[in-house]
Image (cartoon, rainbow over all chains, first blue to last red; front, side):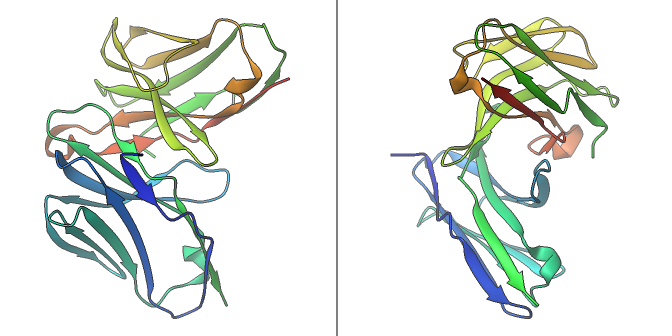
Length: 111
Length: 114
C-alpha cells in the first residue's frame, strides 16, 4: 500500500465549476500537508500549505485536512482554463526530511 | 522560483554511460533534494543534502550518487545509466525559517537513456 493515494483522473470540468481534489494517506505521523500545481513540462509549484487539521483559504483555493479520516482535499472555486494542470498532494511528519507525494490528478478546465 | 536552476534541461544518453545533473541555488538554502518523477509513481526522493558534504539516501537511491562541495551546488550522478533511469529529475530546496516545512522545486531535467 502506498503511503499517499491520489486519484489520477483525468478530471475535466467546465469553466466556473467547483473542483474537488482529494488524497488519502496511511501514516498518522503526517502533520504537514501541501498541494502543488504542475503545468506540463514545468516544475511543481507550491500552491497551499497547511499544518495539522483544519481549513485554509487563499483566493479561489481552499485546502482541508481531516486527520481523523486521513483525508485531505483541495477545492477550486470558479475554475478557470488557466487552472488546467496536474495537482499533486504532498505530506510529511514532524522532523522528517522528505515529502511523500501522491501521483497527481490531471485537471482540465474547458472554456 | 526560489532561485533554482538545473542543467542540462534535456539530455539523451546511452546505456552504460555516466551522467551528471547539476542543481544550482542562489539563496543559501541548507537543504537540497533530488527527486525523480515517473508516471504512476509521482515524485520520489533519490538523495538529499543537509549541508556541504552532508548527504543521505532517499527512497530510490540505488544507482545514484550525489555530491555537495559547496552550498549552492548539488550534483546527481548516474555512474552507469540504465533505461530504467529514464525520467524527469527535479531538484528542490527547503525553505528557511518558519516556512521550513515547505519545499520549492526547480524546472526539471528530462533524461532519456537509450
